[in-house]
Image 1 (spheres, rainbow, N blue to C red):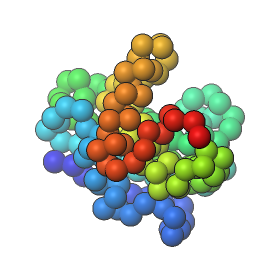
Image 2: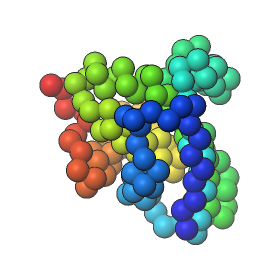
Image 3: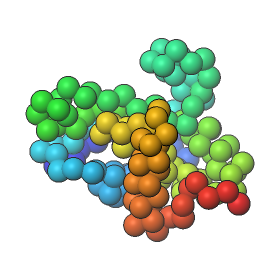
Image 4: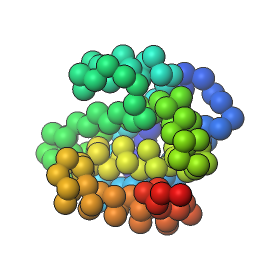
Length: 150
């Protein structure tokens, strides 16, 4: 069972729909979980900066913040957590990388969902594994490899 709350600072036409987010999340699940309960927030840059400072000690806005509740995942097979996506950063990065905004939103949501499941990219081999999973999921969703440089 997948349940998620979707909170938006503003509803903008370039943002993904609830149905798109649901589809992307379902593809991102790498294991079967009894229950998946997430909070997904689309925020502005000042809120992203504030939350990034609070949770990660980094005083700037960022594309996605994943707050995982690992103990519930490991103890109960319950995936729960928060994904905080910054609209302004995602739009800017998409433009800088010559990608569609929707494709970049999909990438950041998949990336964040993988973090919630315990994947990370601190070590090089972990980064390669995580990127390969992201590329596969995004391909299955109809998006190009986000790591290809144009």
